[in-house]
Image (cartoon, rainbow over all chains, first blue to last red; front, side, top):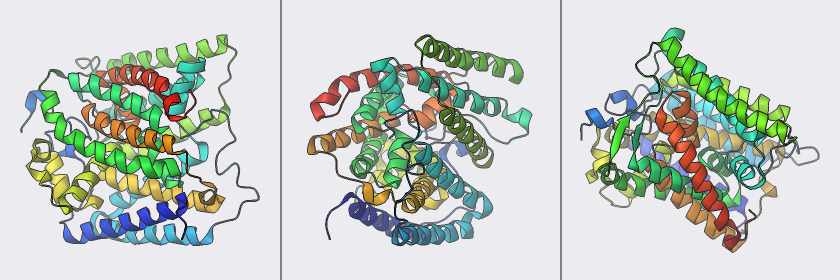
Length: 56
Length: 382
């Protein structure tokens, strides 16, 4: 198999999918998809803390 | 990332005569269906909705080749500013829903992140990175989904950089921060929205009028794309409870992989903050950003399979691949330090009425200018 971008890409996607499913099956899942900001100690979905109320 | 503002150069527009890649299509469709089943089992309609919206966004971005890096480069190099007018159209449309969310009856809040030293450093780094990698947060993702050789290299380094950024952020935050600042935050919803729309509209109209003075044309496809993406962003906002974000997913992927390799990621400060800690402990499919990113890759992959786009991808030169590595790393670190990318910080921040979004825009534009000067060293045109 030649290392064309398509082949490398497909391998990465396949490997990523296997890792993803492995992670999913070995990690507790939440009943609702969420992001860090929903816990109230982050000001943004990126997980940035609210400086004034930072709870490290 | 798109090299053009003017259609048609997209997979959907150039598909005539191209072979439908059945095996690739089946490959992506099977993965999408398998993951959709897992998402459905845990997070139900909400999870499926976000996964699907990611897929549609990936297909839309790839189809329209909706770019940020190339638009900014054209503005800085050739003074072509109509693309920036389109970006502010998108932001303005989002702001109409994001800022007065409660008036729309939505249980959602905007992205208001700190104005900090880390924001200045990170946004500037991100600007350099997006010009070296030829794509930004969304651009790397949908171009990767479309099989771009450059992004096949850039994305893993974006993920690595994002993880490194998570290790650095707590320290850099201590260098100084004014905290999160909402523009007109003390006003009621309506005047706050009006003031922010005036600022966004002022920027967009200024770019439009400047473009008209320079006899530039705003392509209809770009206006349509901005409106379609805005509608999708409204849906993401309503369903997820916050504006669309891309790069936290990358950070989380990097952390999970590092953990698998034995790195005690959970001991680092960022990953002890309760939000990131919760994400690290749970399945990636429980994280909104990851869910949408995966959907975006698969959506772009499916469209690229249908249009025969995948087999047309070639490797860039070695020097350009080095630029992709550096660009990915800089974007990853920069995104974490500056609380997001062109989607989470620029679009999400400004459309939420957060001052950090405007600061991000100015600093990332300055970084882009610096990055453009570096491009020829890597065999990339200015």
